Image (cartoon, rainbow, N blue to C red; front, side, top):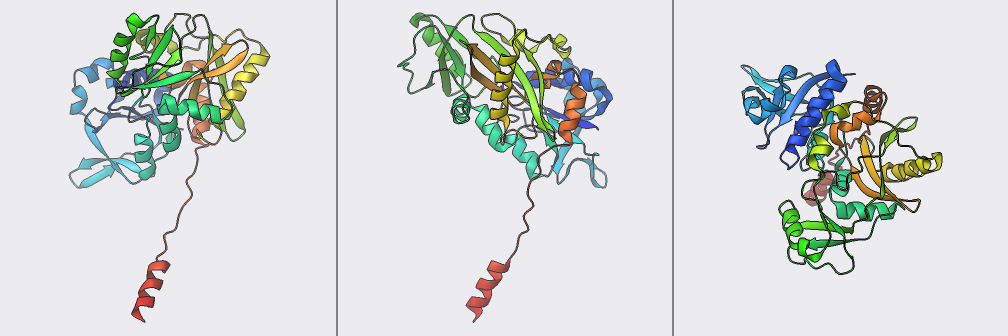
Length: 346
């Protein structure tokens, strides 16, 4: 099984996507046929494998590469005689944040009939917005922490008490996130978050809460779960620790938890995934408080595809590629129009 990696995009997480693509190159090696880069001007480029280095993109050298265009069933490049399709493989949508996780790319790939691993339109929209994610989790019987929404016009926090954590509602990384201990810090934290979004999710912040990450997907034989990771115990996992450590292409250690808690986390994951995220490999981040599981967030396209949580990531992603959801074909008929035409003609 061969793959094409689609990465980049116009979002605050553009660089994170490049980091993820370079990390997957190390993991999947020659299983990757094409690297397709989407730049901030929404132009696609075919990147040679040996050019997959961060400085290649920061220097703008990618603009010298072959430009690609979308076409039915494939990406194509211009030739002297028109357009030529590059041999299509299953695409791994590795665009983090806007474009990749908000449903834009899913809609594009679906429209052109391209096979891809990643969240579909509805699940993208729902998981991209943290407020919608909370409503969705509650509808699936998964706990969430109490929260409030702030906008530029309505900045008053009514029910929560300090300390608080403020997060841009539609941003998948740790960018723009602040922990606020008192009212003196609040305005600055709001201004920071509003640099990235018009809506902020506010939650009560609890220090020392147990956190666990679980990735997985649904295959023909049922769910394939990763190991459960207990992330760094830093108070707030910042951008650098979360994304720029290339060593996270190596498998991490399994969290030391009971089989009962492991089953609880997997059950919550399954409730969130089922009939929503088919075709995607996602990671759910959970809190555990007083032995109760709470959803923190859903990562529909996790950094480096959470490969480090799987003993055989290549095998899992290959099996997923063989179990992608199929869209029902619709045969368009013009019988109704013909009936109207004949009726008016009489």
